[in-house]
Image (tube, rainbow, N blue to C red; front, top):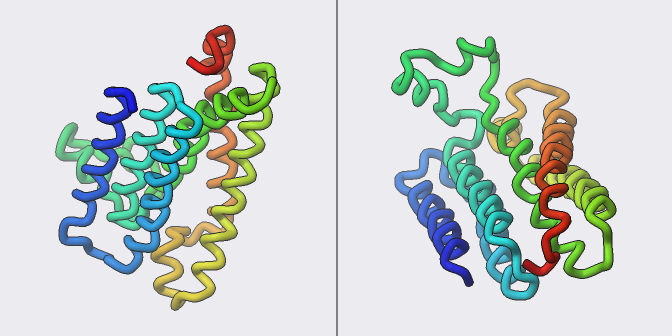
Amino acid sequence: MQPGKRIAFATALAIFALSWIAPRWPFEQALHSSLTVVGLVWLWLHDRRWPMRTSHFALICFFIALHCIGARWLYSNVPYDQWARALSGHTLSELFGWRRNHFDRLIHLLYGICFTPAVWHWLRQRWPLTARQGFVIAVMLIMCTSLLYEWLEWAIALGLSPEAAESYNGQQGDIWDAHADMLLATVGALSVWPMMRRERLEPVHA
């Protein structure tokens, strides 16, 4: 593994470990963190089989690190307003008129942004696709996996008490939460096309 990838991976592991210091909601955090463990193992094995570009690898590590932060506070309780007030004297909710915690929205948007380049590269490693063809398929895969994740959340919630299900899902009373999450992942995926256009003339296996 290249030095840049090692640093990114080690940083994600460190943030994962730090997020488990004196957990506030251990059970719910463990549910979220199970995906973190799966993601880290998959990333390590996938990069050995299909080497990723360092920038793509680092983007996924960045996403995993933020997911660890979200998991610690169950997304709905991430204290970004307190952090913003400590730094600037103002909160993001005051600035933008928000009425809910939007950290979960950020994570779904970043899912599309951070995973699409790696998926696009993997598709072109495996099949003789043009940059545009690979990108279209990558976006569709992001959309499909977003749907599967929402189904997984729903399936887990069925086995929990109503209070635990609400805490885990973090809907915050929004009946369109799943729809908004999937839309943001799709928007995030589409937004990286300019980066893909710049990379399309580079060797696919770089």
